[in-house]
Image 1: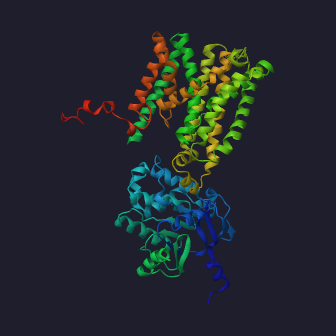
Image 2: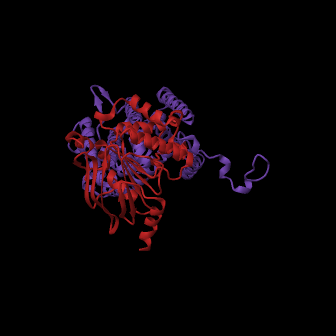
Image 3: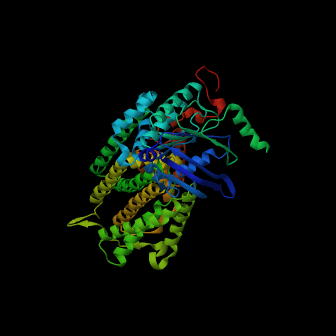
Length: 249
Length: 330
């Protein structure tokens, strides 16, 4: 029995309403809607070319919407340019780990901290200490060029950098791609910790992920349309049928 | 570790430059003072180009256009309108700033080679325009009688006083570059140079910061354009022809993109080395370009560029000539 206040607190942080993206004449993402509550997880699954990255880019502002709304904390940010969306609380951990060769690990983290709005930024030392506690391997590498990092370390850096921007919703594009099982476990342990602490996430992956969440929605995309959207994860067989079924149809 | 070596190299180069700049007038050679003055002016333009290309990763050929705005703007405002040369320098600079905004704003929103292509056309067009617009620029004859800068009784027509002025200006440009390179803006430039999308998701206003670098480079180029003609009292199309653009890029690439003192070293080499070969006359350019090519093959990142890109001299030899340490051929 939630009270009025309870309803307020549990209100959806991010509402994605009928978001649709075209690349020229090609429809990359058909109208898609979902809501992200505070501390919840939205898992977006689908094979290559299903429109997962397109969806994240549309949320982050890297590509323009054809139609639809992206409402963050009551504000429609669908027309806000990418570099200003960070200030509203959306941070993207891009596909390919967002390498910026030539910049040291610390410079990457500095960029993340600068991206946060001054009101939420907090002290640099505290922010740095938080992400280094979450990802200890980065501590020894602070002054190294980030192009010398291993895949796992680079993924940790990309997440740490996004966290320093103090997002309310973290978007992650295939953080497990190309990583060794050990590195995947490490990255996902950190993500589970962040989600448990109340950070809302929209996570894109190709296959099921080891991330427990209290509140979650799973969306499966296939050829730019939603073929599954429920508050539970599809079983392995279900997922296989979804990936293959649409193609056969 | 390589960063530390790079910093030591930069420090050594800076000390070398300071010693050379102090020693040149003491040597009593008027020619040396003249070439060092030209070095200071070109070095300033190249430091600004380095900000645009070395930090922000934007390839622009527009530096000579903005130098021409400074040079011709100053010439016209002083000779034809009788304005004070300081005021003319300032007004020409404002004109260059405005031009940079108008040219840069649409071009820098695009990705890829649009900026390079458009500014290359602009550079060629600038030369054609100042040659062809007889009524305004006197065409190939140019405009002479440009008054020198003066402060009270001190006239900067005197080579030694102008020498000091040119190096003070160069030092200011270098200091500005260093401050910006170390700031958040410098980091943001380096970030957008390698990943525009990543940079924008990190809150970096990519078109805005590219425009800022472009305008700053234009401002420096314009002031150098003014200073140059106020020193030589003459402006003509040859100051802005295609050779000058190539020289600016050579200065930057020889000195080292993204390095701090590199542009000064590069400018010094490109200005002074050809003078040392004056006995060779006809072959001077050929020999000079061969030297530059060899240098860039051995150190692709330039003299003060990052060490990890350096290539051993033997790599230039054909395979059958390369002897490995074990005694076999590589």
